[in-house]
Image (cartoon, rainbow, N blue to C red; front, side):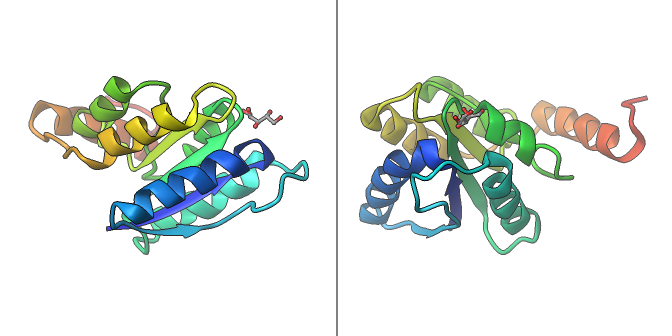
Length: 150
Ligand code: RB5
C-alpha cells in the first residue's frame, strides 16, 4: 500500500511523528510537504495529496492541518476524493468501513501523537464493507457527476 501524506505549517511535527510510526509498521509513505513550519496555505498541500490519490499513483492519503477541517474541505473539491476529518479512532475506522474514505484528515491542534497513531492504525487496519455502503457511495458519485442523486 502506498500512502501520500501532506500538511501545512501547523502539522509538520505531527506529520513527522505519524510518518515514523507508519514506516516502522512497514508502510510505504511519501511526504508531499510542507517540511517547514513557516506559515503557508493548507489547500496547496491538500491539492498535492488529493492529486496523487485521484491519479491512482497512491492508494490513500493522510492530511494534517491545525484542525483537519481545512485540508478536508480542499481535498473534497477533487472528483473521486472522499476526505474525512476525524478526531478519534472509532470515526477513523468507520470512515473506511462505511464511507470508503480515501483520505483521512486530522488536526495537529486537536489530536496528540498517540491519538494520531490510533487514528491512522484504525483507518489503515480496516477495509471498506461494500454492500449498502456502496449504494451510498454511488449516490455521492452521482452528485459529483450530475449535481443530484435523482
Ligand atoms: C493555520 O493557522 C490553520 O488555519 C490551518 O492549519 C487549519 O486549521 C485550517 O483549517
